[in-house]
Image 1 (cartoon, rainbow over the protein chains, first blue to last red):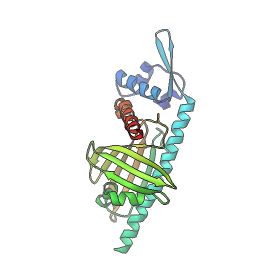
Image 2: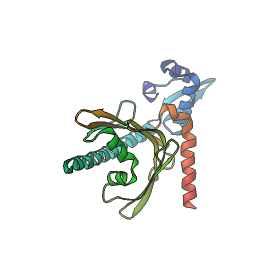
Image 3: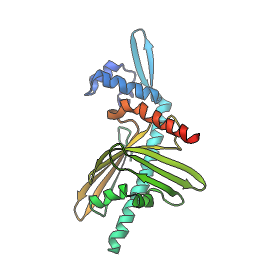
Length: 89
Length: 144
């Protein structure tokens, strides 16, 4: 959904058309992303226009990068532990 | 490695069969060995690996204490384990996240282990808010 919004503003209807889920599911997901500070909602007349919140997205990307290096280090430690165990058998 | 959809994915070929690798994630003694590299020490590890069961790791690193807490979602030995994951050092408004680990047998008694860590998985989106609010509530209780 964030990828879809990178192209610019969109309405929930537009997003729901591109995803294999219901309008209600997309609307729920939008409100979660909005609460998380990842997207912004502009109400113009009767239409709600959504766009990416750049600062929020940057934070989310930093979080993903941190988790990637966290799990890479743990996976190496786990693999090393099992390699030592195999050698000692 | 960061996937195009904003998911942290780490993959390793591990020199043991899936049941042995899986047990490294559910046995507290094994888990604390590789989860907390020195100088961090896991002062306490509680693992209740069944759906709805809780996970908690208390960690001390250079005099700082923090913890990771979560809840098991999928417990399917020896192929899949998934759980929510929230660390007390994250900003309080960080939504909880989901870690899914899968174990696939490979030749020579090895396992392809895939760790996926997602911040906002679509299928859990509607439970999400209540999830992290509950954790924030637990935190508040601890602070009392």
